Image (cartoon, rainbow, N blue to C red; front, side):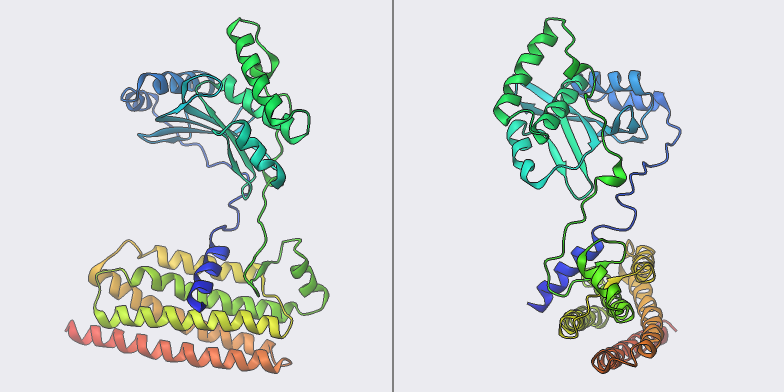
Length: 376
């Protein structure tokens, strides 16, 4: 149960980094149009046509791969994606999907099922706050998004929207240029207003300082912010070591180092579990302050520097990172212990955590020294 809790909390905290839903599109890079045309020349005929239509209307995309072209902030859309892949789709009549248009949109939970029932090619990402329509024509994606909006606002039922889609497509075929195909009939929201970070379900989970979550506000209002940040700091230390131990156990490295990584994974996992339980016992919810988030980012950045390595190169880098990381963790724990002087239970947990971290540091130093002797 402890290991399952560890994995779940790691996913909960790490899966949405700060700024992931800021609404800022990647900076456009200068793209060679000739290279783009060469890429899509190998695409099937219909996706190739769709891609060229988007190129003609919006210019060069910001992202180019052999499988897709992506435009950011094009027209009223947050993102447009032209795909090489053709997906058969029979609503409102047989065709293939390869164009996707995405807008910033907050879909209420009780409307998610309705939108999928209306058009199964729709994609809803409530966490980021996006609604996407996929079809073979931009106008049909615009139509889908307009009818999605009608369903969400209660203007149409699912059945009415499906019927309207077919009728409007027929009007378009007859050259009547229906408004629902020509343009969005509403203004998409700003990306910064549509994100939904959801709620933790694991007891004792941290909350973000910037959240309007009642637990975060409660920690601040009760004057327990110091304790809340201390708990979150310990959680961050544990998660950084757990995250690094995961890939280490799968690398082609010596058994002693692999065993060390396994030990770190298990012991930091147990300490994480105990930290969350302690928070519940002392009625303090861990709060991820900017300082704590910076620790998370630092851990990710340091692991990213060597995670692609394998064999001896990975082993040396991993052990060195464990020496450095545990040394810094000891200093951080000592700093937090000073702040916890008034809370005996929290101070006791910090001292126990410190003992574990100190033991891990000595083992890392021993592994490092052994490797250095062997290389002489």
